[in-house]
Image (tube, rainbow, N blue to C red; front, side, top):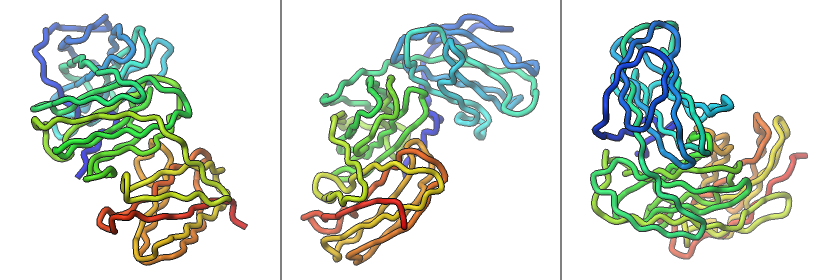
Amino acid sequence: MMKKFGAFAGVALLLLVSVSLVSAQQAVSLGDTLQGGLTGDPVTFSIELNAGDVVTITAESTDFDSYVAVSDADGNLIGENDDGGANFGLNSNLTVVAPADGTYTIELRAAFGNSQGTYTLRIVGTEATQVTYGSSTEFTAAEEANKFFSFTGAAGDVLDISAVSEQDVQIAITGPDSQVLIEDDDSGLDNDPLVRRLRLPEDGVYGIIISHSWQEVMDENPITLSVEEVDDLVVGPEPVTVKIGIQSDIDVLHFDVEAGQPYTLEIQNHDPEQSFSIDMHFLGDEYTSGELRTYRASRVVMDFTMDQSGTVRLTINNPGWQGETGNTLAISVQPAG
């Protein structure tokens, strides 16, 4: 089962660091461990970061349920976490990727009310390997829980991001706000992870996290990470043809919707002996907005509405055991009526 990162919740890094006592706001650095007391009001710290820096912040306390957040110099929230750490989820664990050079603010407070007590705050920096479009990077990460990469992208860029390995790994992609946009562990060939046709929503620095799908750490088998720029598939009233089950088990199409407007999705299956499923969601949503599984269907018509406006990510999935020649589908979406 795939582990959920949330906003990088659960990412744990162990390093030997210095310890200092604090009582109020102060400047801190990567590698610091801070011990202090919370008296009911939030405490804040400033830290200088470079674009692409990966920073993991953990807050531990036996006295209160901690909450940590990171914002930039303009007050824009970069990431936040309440319960990603240990102590039955009461501790916080947040990892962010700095989108630009500058001064950032770390805020620590109680998740609920004005609780008081002592805390330990750890700030750990991890090197993220920068990758570019068209690159292929082979690496090993034996005994490591996560491997971090970053790339700079522009709004509208469309990418295939994959990791190929003999071990069972997964991919999580984070946006410039350090929130997880999408995760995958088995959509590529041989059940390798593949994020197919990811359309970037904004300019900025994006993160890639690779980890084992079900073990705490990765093994010695090499992993090859690839980031490829690909064509977008935009579906509308005119049918778009896709073939799945050859290069990957899935393909992805995009279309825009308006909240409350009824739409009709139609799919022609060229081989009714092969089943397929569809999933519709907005990028970054934790849950799907619509899902349908078919068996021996030659034609599928589905009417639907979305509760918000935006670009929908339509994923077509073909079970890997359904033949070796792939399956061809013709897909269209248009306003109903």
